[in-house]
Length: 314
Image 1: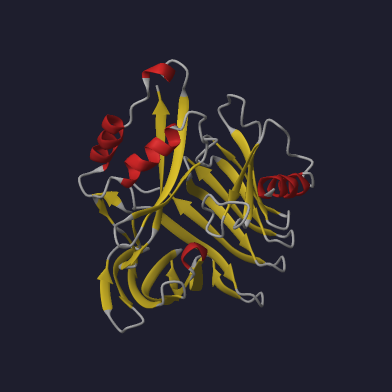
Image 2: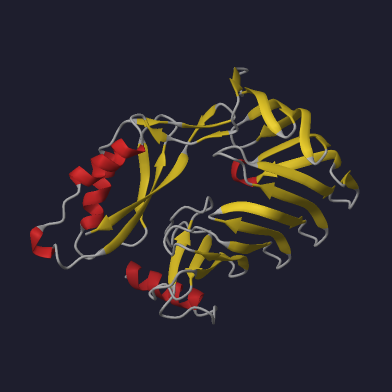
Protein backbone atom coordinates (compact mmCIF):
# COMPACT_ATOMS: atom_id res chain seq x y z
CA UNK A 1 0.00 0.00 0.00
CA UNK A 2 2.85 2.35 0.88
CA UNK A 3 4.51 1.71 -2.49
CA UNK A 4 1.26 2.46 -4.28
CA UNK A 5 0.80 5.65 -2.26
CA UNK A 6 4.38 6.71 -3.05
CA UNK A 7 3.83 6.09 -6.75
CA UNK A 8 0.63 8.13 -6.75
CA UNK A 9 2.38 11.03 -5.02
CA UNK A 10 5.27 10.83 -7.45
CA UNK A 11 2.91 10.72 -10.44
CA UNK A 12 0.94 13.72 -9.22
CA UNK A 13 4.13 15.66 -8.53
CA UNK A 14 5.80 14.89 -11.85
CA UNK A 15 2.63 15.43 -13.85
CA UNK A 16 2.97 19.09 -12.93
CA UNK A 17 6.13 19.26 -15.05
CA UNK A 18 5.17 19.06 -18.68
CA UNK A 19 8.88 18.82 -19.56
CA UNK A 20 9.33 15.39 -17.92
CA UNK A 21 8.88 12.33 -20.14
CA UNK A 22 9.76 8.63 -20.18
CA UNK A 23 13.27 9.24 -21.54
CA UNK A 24 14.20 11.45 -18.59
CA UNK A 25 15.75 10.40 -15.28
CA UNK A 26 14.24 11.75 -12.06
CA UNK A 27 16.25 11.63 -8.81
CA UNK A 28 15.22 12.69 -5.31
CA UNK A 29 17.77 14.87 -3.46
CA UNK A 30 17.90 15.77 0.23
CA UNK A 31 18.62 19.22 1.68
CA UNK A 32 22.36 18.78 1.01
CA UNK A 33 21.73 17.65 -2.60
CA UNK A 34 22.63 14.06 -1.75
CA UNK A 35 20.58 11.14 -3.10
CA UNK A 36 17.37 11.07 -1.09
CA UNK A 37 13.99 9.36 -0.95
CA UNK A 38 10.35 10.32 -1.30
CA UNK A 39 10.24 10.72 2.47
CA UNK A 40 13.14 13.18 2.87
CA UNK A 41 13.64 14.89 -0.46
CA UNK A 42 13.89 18.68 -0.78
CA UNK A 43 14.84 18.84 -4.47
CA UNK A 44 14.09 16.87 -7.63
CA UNK A 45 16.76 16.48 -10.32
CA UNK A 46 15.73 15.77 -13.90
CA UNK A 47 18.22 14.70 -16.58
CA UNK A 48 16.65 15.09 -20.02
CA UNK A 49 16.89 12.22 -22.52
CA UNK A 50 18.80 10.17 -19.95
CA UNK A 51 18.33 6.89 -21.81
CA UNK A 52 19.86 8.22 -25.02
CA UNK A 53 23.61 8.17 -25.69
CA UNK A 54 24.81 11.78 -25.95
CA UNK A 55 27.89 13.92 -25.29
CA UNK A 56 25.92 16.39 -23.18
CA UNK A 57 22.64 16.30 -21.28
CA UNK A 58 20.35 19.09 -20.17
CA UNK A 59 19.72 18.92 -16.43
CA UNK A 60 17.30 20.78 -14.19
CA UNK A 61 16.85 20.82 -10.41
CA UNK A 62 13.48 21.74 -8.89
CA UNK A 63 12.51 22.81 -5.39
CA UNK A 64 10.03 20.55 -3.61
CA UNK A 65 7.40 23.15 -4.46
CA UNK A 66 7.98 22.46 -8.16
CA UNK A 67 9.75 25.76 -8.82
CA UNK A 68 12.95 25.66 -10.87
CA UNK A 69 16.21 25.84 -8.86
CA UNK A 70 18.85 25.30 -11.55
CA UNK A 71 19.27 24.72 -15.29
CA UNK A 72 22.56 23.52 -16.75
CA UNK A 73 24.32 21.07 -19.06
CA UNK A 74 26.32 18.05 -17.89
CA UNK A 75 28.76 15.73 -19.66
CA UNK A 76 27.93 12.91 -17.21
CA UNK A 77 24.30 11.93 -16.84
CA UNK A 78 24.72 10.18 -13.47
CA UNK A 79 27.26 12.26 -11.56
CA UNK A 80 26.89 15.85 -12.69
CA UNK A 81 29.91 17.33 -14.45
CA UNK A 82 28.73 20.75 -15.50
CA UNK A 83 29.87 22.32 -18.75
CA UNK A 84 28.93 25.76 -20.02
CA UNK A 85 26.51 28.22 -18.47
CA UNK A 86 24.42 27.27 -15.41
CA UNK A 87 21.56 29.45 -14.15
CA UNK A 88 20.39 29.23 -10.54
CA UNK A 89 17.05 30.58 -9.24
CA UNK A 90 15.43 31.55 -5.98
CA UNK A 91 12.19 29.79 -5.18
CA UNK A 92 10.28 32.99 -6.02
CA UNK A 93 11.51 32.66 -9.61
CA UNK A 94 14.14 35.42 -9.56
CA UNK A 95 17.61 34.68 -10.83
CA UNK A 96 20.14 33.88 -8.13
CA UNK A 97 23.37 33.23 -9.98
CA UNK A 98 24.86 32.66 -13.42
CA UNK A 99 28.06 30.60 -13.48
CA UNK A 100 30.16 29.33 -16.38
CA UNK A 101 31.73 25.88 -15.95
CA UNK A 102 34.61 24.14 -17.70
CA UNK A 103 35.06 20.50 -16.70
CA UNK A 104 32.82 21.06 -13.65
CA UNK A 105 34.90 23.99 -12.37
CA UNK A 106 33.62 27.58 -12.33
CA UNK A 107 35.72 29.49 -14.86
CA UNK A 108 35.09 33.01 -16.15
CA UNK A 109 32.57 35.69 -15.16
CA UNK A 110 29.99 34.95 -12.46
CA UNK A 111 27.02 37.16 -11.61
CA UNK A 112 24.85 36.96 -8.49
CA UNK A 113 21.59 38.64 -7.39
CA UNK A 114 19.59 39.03 -4.19
CA UNK A 115 16.19 37.40 -3.79
CA UNK A 116 14.49 40.75 -4.46
CA UNK A 117 16.10 40.85 -7.91
CA UNK A 118 18.78 43.46 -7.16
CA UNK A 119 22.35 42.82 -8.30
CA UNK A 120 24.73 41.47 -5.67
CA UNK A 121 28.12 40.87 -7.26
CA UNK A 122 30.29 40.38 -10.31
CA UNK A 123 33.33 38.15 -9.92
CA UNK A 124 35.67 36.26 -12.22
CA UNK A 125 36.95 32.75 -11.55
CA UNK A 126 40.45 32.10 -12.87
CA UNK A 127 41.91 28.64 -13.35
CA UNK A 128 45.21 28.08 -11.50
CA UNK A 129 48.31 26.21 -12.60
CA UNK A 130 47.52 23.31 -10.25
CA UNK A 131 44.69 21.89 -8.14
CA UNK A 132 43.75 24.28 -5.35
CA UNK A 133 45.48 27.27 -6.94
CA UNK A 134 42.34 28.81 -8.45
CA UNK A 135 41.89 32.56 -7.94
CA UNK A 136 38.67 34.56 -7.69
CA UNK A 137 38.72 38.18 -8.84
CA UNK A 138 36.14 40.34 -7.04
CA UNK A 139 35.05 43.09 -9.42
CA UNK A 140 31.82 44.63 -8.08
CA UNK A 141 29.77 44.09 -4.91
CA UNK A 142 26.54 45.63 -3.55
CA UNK A 143 24.86 44.95 -0.20
CA UNK A 144 21.15 44.18 0.23
CA UNK A 145 20.38 47.91 0.40
CA UNK A 146 21.96 48.35 -3.04
CA UNK A 147 24.95 50.22 -1.58
CA UNK A 148 28.10 49.41 -3.53
CA UNK A 149 31.07 48.35 -1.36
CA UNK A 150 33.45 47.08 -4.04
CA UNK A 151 33.97 49.29 -7.07
CA UNK A 152 36.17 48.05 -9.92
CA UNK A 153 38.05 45.66 -7.63
CA UNK A 154 38.55 47.97 -4.63
CA UNK A 155 36.64 48.00 -1.34
CA UNK A 156 35.11 45.73 1.33
CA UNK A 157 33.50 42.40 0.44
CA UNK A 158 31.16 39.98 2.22
CA UNK A 159 31.43 36.38 1.07
CA UNK A 160 28.85 33.67 1.76
CA UNK A 161 29.58 29.95 1.41
CA UNK A 162 26.14 28.34 1.41
CA UNK A 163 27.38 24.75 1.42
CA UNK A 164 29.10 25.37 4.75
CA UNK A 165 26.76 28.03 6.22
CA UNK A 166 29.75 30.36 6.42
CA UNK A 167 30.12 34.11 6.01
CA UNK A 168 33.31 36.21 6.01
CA UNK A 169 34.28 39.84 5.46
CA UNK A 170 37.45 41.62 4.45
CA UNK A 171 39.27 43.98 2.11
CA UNK A 172 39.64 43.73 -1.66
CA UNK A 173 42.58 45.32 -3.46
CA UNK A 174 43.29 44.98 -7.17
CA UNK A 175 40.30 42.59 -7.40
CA UNK A 176 41.80 40.18 -4.84
CA UNK A 177 41.36 39.37 -1.15
CA UNK A 178 43.96 41.21 0.90
CA UNK A 179 44.89 41.37 4.58
CA UNK A 180 42.85 39.99 7.47
CA UNK A 181 39.42 38.44 6.87
CA UNK A 182 37.06 37.51 9.70
CA UNK A 183 34.14 35.07 9.54
CA UNK A 184 32.10 32.29 11.07
CA UNK A 185 30.21 29.11 10.20
CA UNK A 186 26.89 28.48 11.94
CA UNK A 187 26.85 24.84 10.76
CA UNK A 188 30.20 23.97 12.32
CA UNK A 189 29.97 26.48 15.17
CA UNK A 190 33.34 28.11 14.52
CA UNK A 191 34.75 31.62 14.23
CA UNK A 192 37.77 32.07 11.99
CA UNK A 193 40.41 34.64 11.04
CA UNK A 194 42.42 34.44 7.81
CA UNK A 195 45.30 36.32 6.22
CA UNK A 196 45.45 36.85 2.45
CA UNK A 197 48.12 38.22 0.14
CA UNK A 198 47.21 38.79 -3.52
CA UNK A 199 44.13 36.62 -3.17
CA UNK A 200 45.94 33.59 -1.73
CA UNK A 201 45.35 32.23 1.75
CA UNK A 202 48.54 32.51 3.81
CA UNK A 203 47.21 31.30 7.15
CA UNK A 204 43.98 30.75 9.03
CA UNK A 205 42.82 30.07 12.58
CA UNK A 206 39.48 28.61 13.67
CA UNK A 207 38.06 28.70 17.19
CA UNK A 208 35.40 26.10 17.93
CA UNK A 209 32.52 26.25 20.41
CA UNK A 210 34.78 24.93 23.20
CA UNK A 211 37.41 27.59 22.63
CA UNK A 212 39.88 25.25 20.92
CA UNK A 213 42.14 26.93 18.36
CA UNK A 214 42.98 25.17 15.09
CA UNK A 215 45.48 26.50 12.56
CA UNK A 216 45.11 25.73 8.86
CA UNK A 217 46.39 26.75 5.43
CA UNK A 218 43.59 25.28 3.28
CA UNK A 219 39.89 26.10 3.36
CA UNK A 220 38.86 22.60 2.27
CA UNK A 221 40.72 19.30 2.60
CA UNK A 222 39.03 16.47 0.74
CA UNK A 223 38.84 12.97 2.28
CA UNK A 224 41.16 10.47 0.60
CA UNK A 225 42.20 6.85 1.16
CA UNK A 226 45.26 6.74 3.43
CA UNK A 227 47.10 4.54 0.92
CA UNK A 228 46.00 6.61 -2.08
CA UNK A 229 43.11 6.49 -4.52
CA UNK A 230 44.73 3.73 -6.58
CA UNK A 231 44.81 1.44 -3.53
CA UNK A 232 41.08 2.04 -3.02
CA UNK A 233 40.33 1.38 -6.71
CA UNK A 234 42.42 -1.82 -6.57
CA UNK A 235 40.40 -2.95 -3.53
CA UNK A 236 37.16 -2.46 -5.47
CA UNK A 237 38.54 -4.11 -8.61
CA UNK A 238 39.87 -7.20 -6.81
CA UNK A 239 36.83 -7.67 -4.59
CA UNK A 240 34.05 -7.04 -7.12
CA UNK A 241 33.30 -10.05 -9.30
CA UNK A 242 30.39 -10.52 -11.67
CA UNK A 243 28.97 -14.08 -11.50
CA UNK A 244 29.67 -16.13 -14.62
CA UNK A 245 26.01 -16.80 -15.34
CA UNK A 246 25.36 -13.08 -15.98
CA UNK A 247 28.84 -12.06 -17.12
CA UNK A 248 27.76 -11.47 -20.71
CA UNK A 249 24.45 -9.91 -19.72
CA UNK A 250 25.42 -6.84 -17.73
CA UNK A 251 27.21 -3.73 -18.95
CA UNK A 252 27.40 -0.04 -18.20
CA UNK A 253 28.38 1.77 -15.01
CA UNK A 254 26.98 1.83 -11.48
CA UNK A 255 27.33 5.18 -9.67
CA UNK A 256 27.58 5.32 -5.89
CA UNK A 257 27.57 8.16 -3.40
CA UNK A 258 28.71 7.81 0.19
CA UNK A 259 29.90 9.93 3.07
CA UNK A 260 33.29 9.86 4.76
CA UNK A 261 32.32 10.71 8.31
CA UNK A 262 34.47 12.97 10.46
CA UNK A 263 35.40 9.89 12.52
CA UNK A 264 36.77 8.20 9.38
CA UNK A 265 33.88 5.76 8.91
CA UNK A 266 31.89 5.26 5.70
CA UNK A 267 28.15 5.90 5.79
CA UNK A 268 25.09 6.96 3.78
CA UNK A 269 25.94 4.72 0.82
CA UNK A 270 23.50 5.08 -2.08
CA UNK A 271 23.46 3.86 -5.67
CA UNK A 272 22.11 6.16 -8.36
CA UNK A 273 21.19 3.43 -10.84
CA UNK A 274 20.40 0.04 -9.29
CA UNK A 275 20.78 -3.07 -11.43
CA UNK A 276 18.38 -6.01 -11.55
CA UNK A 277 20.95 -8.64 -10.53
CA UNK A 278 21.85 -7.32 -7.06
CA UNK A 279 25.36 -6.24 -8.06
CA UNK A 280 24.88 -2.82 -6.44
CA UNK A 281 24.25 -4.51 -3.06
CA UNK A 282 27.47 -6.50 -3.47
CA UNK A 283 29.39 -3.32 -4.29
CA UNK A 284 27.95 -1.52 -1.25
CA UNK A 285 29.33 -4.25 1.04
CA UNK A 286 32.76 -3.96 -0.61
CA UNK A 287 32.78 -0.18 -0.18
CA UNK A 288 31.83 -0.54 3.50
CA UNK A 289 34.69 -2.96 4.09
CA UNK A 290 37.32 -0.40 3.09
CA UNK A 291 38.36 1.32 6.32
CA UNK A 292 41.54 3.23 5.45
CA UNK A 293 40.34 6.82 4.98
CA UNK A 294 41.83 10.19 5.87
CA UNK A 295 38.99 12.51 6.87
CA UNK A 296 37.98 15.82 5.34
CA UNK A 297 38.33 19.25 6.92
CA UNK A 298 36.70 22.66 6.65
CA UNK A 299 38.96 25.40 7.94
CA UNK A 300 40.79 22.86 10.10
CA UNK A 301 37.59 21.33 11.53
CA UNK A 302 36.83 17.63 10.80
CA UNK A 303 33.60 17.32 8.80
CA UNK A 304 31.48 14.76 6.96
CA UNK A 305 32.03 14.92 3.20
CA UNK A 306 30.35 13.23 0.26
CA UNK A 307 32.24 11.00 -2.17
CA UNK A 308 31.31 9.67 -5.62
CA UNK A 309 32.39 6.34 -7.10
CA UNK A 310 31.67 4.87 -10.56
CA UNK A 311 32.02 1.08 -11.01
CA UNK A 312 32.11 -0.12 -14.61
CA UNK A 313 30.46 -3.47 -15.31
CA UNK A 314 32.44 -5.52 -17.81
